[in-house]
Length: 325
Image: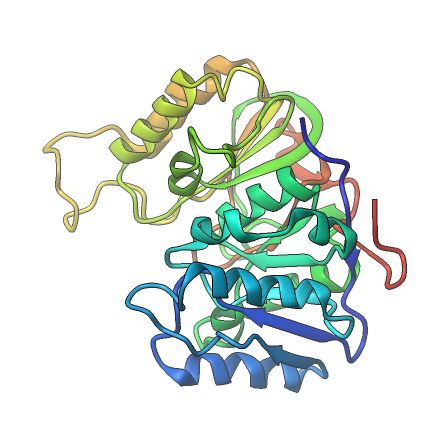
């Protein structure tokens, strides 16, 4: 049973972004510095966690230290929004070391995607925290990040994300794999990470939820395998609707020629999702494509697959001073 939903504050003018590295560390120090300078250029303050510059092979220091940095940001009264450095690997390792009661007492939106899925799921189920699936600090400062992605991230953090989720400005086509309309809380993230959580205390709860599906650089047979596992585990039987990202680079390619003949990723989605009998919409820019529309999680949204729209009905952040349950 999910905890009552809690909402952190919106990002006010001149507010502070607290940055932590719960997963992998930086590759080049300039990746961190670029992100800091971008936030400051927009008039915001940045507070870096103690371990942001730590590196221990493929993670940013030991799990307890990473969890401690995250908890310190929740406790810091100067911090409005917590942004992860990036994903990579390792977010699930910090979950056993988090104080969910303290998170619930001091709710703040956590922003990140890909590997940060583990935190999105864990914080929602453990503390009822609404979060934001969006770029980390590295992405915010990257020269390849589009103005669409940056402005959407800012809009969600400043106002909570209520309203229509925008489509890809370069390719607005969306495909309704199954029509219909439904309203339910958005839950999910990167399929690979959701699969890793199976059988753990942090296993995703999709009963009655709008299942948000995202992944990238995985061929169709891998997507097929993960959806097969979720179905066999009973996770898909109770979903109210499904929202699928563009699944960037998930088609067959010469770089990953595992099979001489293969289903397309749309074939895989049709086989697994259409028989569920719920609305399914495919193609929103919610993952690792050229553009990304930051997405509130843990809040109610309405999917109208016939109209090809996803609308956030309740903002994921509350006006400053209005956080809590």
